[in-house]
Each structure stands twice: as C-alpha cells, then as structure tokens.
Length: 84
Length: 214
Ligand SMILES: Nc1nc2c(ncn2[C@@H]2O[C@H](COP(=O)(O)OP(=O)(O)O)[C@@H](O)[C@H]2O)c(=O)[nH]1
Ligand SMILES: [Mg+2]
Image 1: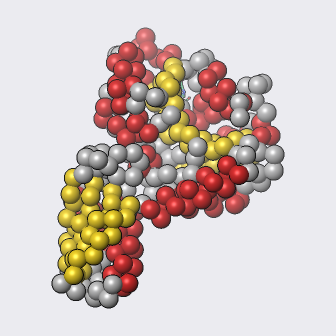
Image 2 (image 1 turned 180 degrees about the vertical axis):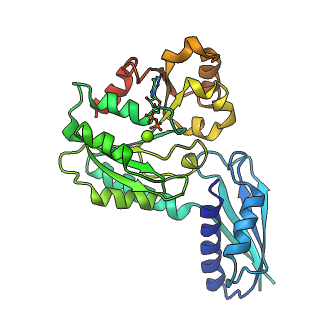
C-alpha cells in the first residue's frame, strides 16, 4: 500500500548514487525484500514507470530479490544498480 | 557498464529522521508512544478513557492525531483537555517521520513527558514506517476477527503491547480469544497482550500504568 513512498525513495537514492558514480543511464536496480515487506511488485512497477520519467532511470527495471534475513519494520534494501 | 553497490535501506531517510526524533525526545525525558490499529478498532476511544483516568496528569500528555482528513479526533482530545495537534495526510495511508517532526514543532511540550501518536488506521503501511516512538501499542478489536495477527504479521511482530478491544461484544460474535493470543505470541513472544473494553472502561489499567509511569 505504500509503494508510492517506497518508489519515491528508490528514485531519490539511485539518482544521487548514479550522479556520484558518473552514471547517466541506469538499466537495472536490484532491491532485496523481506518476506513481509508488504510491497506489491506490480504496484511498485506502476509507480516506477511514472516516477522515473526525466531521470537517469527511465529505461531501468526494478528486480526484487527475496531475502528472508530481512525482518523488522524496514524490509527493503537497494543492493546494487547497473548502468553506464 | 558498471555495477554499483548501494546496500541502503529504502526507507533510510525516514528512519534517520525517526532516529533524530527519538534521540531528541529521549534527551528531553519525553517518551513517545505509537498507537496503531485498523480504522475503528478503538484507538481514540481507548485514549479518551485512559486520559480521563484520575491517575493520569493530563498536563503531562500531548497527543498527535493522524488522519487522512478532518480534525474530528483532535476535537475529541481537546474536549478532554489534552494538548493536541492534528496531522492530515490527505490520502496517504500512514504517518511518516517528517510529518511527525512537523507535528512536534507545533506542540508546546513544556511539562510534557508522554506523547501519544494516534496513527492512521491501517495494519500494513503504518508498521513499516518508524516515526521515532519509543513504544508501539497495537489496538485490535474483536469485530475484526481473530485471524488478523497471521494476516498482518508485521504489525503484530513489531508491537510492544497488543490490546484486544471490544471484548464486551464477544457474546455476539465468533472470536477465538485463545487463538488470537497464541498467534500474537507465536509471532512476537515478547508482546504484552491485554483484553479490554474501552467502551465500558474495563481492562484499561495496563494502559493507564504505561501512561502514568515514566
Ligand atoms: N462495543 C464497543 N465499541 C467500541 C469499543 N471501543 C470503541 N468502540 C466503538 O468503535 C467505534 C470506533 O472507535 P474509535 O475510537 O473512533 O476508533 P479508531 O478509529 O481506532 O480511533 C466507535 O463507534 C466506538 O464507540 C469497545 O470497547 N466496545
Ligand atoms: Mg481515531
């Protein structure tokens, strides 16, 4: 239900990290999610398609990876992203 | 093509603000309690009854009310003479730390040692967003059915105290209290579980004690 807030943060964090690493185009973002992250992949992609417009992530996809070691309130970590 | 390692909590910005709030309040000797639960489980009714208890010094308490729209709950708090500020998320289904920070800035905290955040009614998103509280109290109610802990595990895993409210309605509905308690404890063995009826003002002593004892 909070996919828009999650997406806003992903775009924000990756924008900064891409700029710091001289990356102009991001192709893939790998996000680790715990068993109960309560983030729906379909909805996340829906928001991402809207929020990535005009950013270095316009052509990127988000790949979710299950990580059972993530428990507690925060269960989503941006692991890596790929770009050039 | 380069691969960049980030390893960053997606909600880290929110969590950092929450950490700042918590540290700030702790330093001032103030405790913040996050009141969570479904819409209508009785969060505001519990607060009304607990705050009206003679053991509670209302001048020491402040309430941050969170709702999508209206200041109806803030009015209910004002009626019993507790300082309050209303936050309206205008659609967002949970409070985030920066909203709570704004709410705190609007409150006169002189003499206050306990702040209660009456969060948006929601068992999903509110569990994921830290707001800088020292304690989470989840108000569940019998009319929701006893299967909610297993269906919304994050809420019940992260709650320090679980109140099962509306026990006055047990004779009229099918609700397995033992199963509810066992499920909560299976998810969260450290949770304190209490049964109450805010409507009748019964079983609220543990909450009164939490509010009274700093
Ligand atoms: N029967 C019964 N009704 C209750 C109890 N506690 C709250 N209610 C009712 O449940 C409704 C929602 O309560 P409210 O405190 O506004 O819920 P909130 O949305 O969680 O703040 C109101 O009509 C209350 O009168 C209770 O212990 N027993
Ligand atoms: Mg309410």
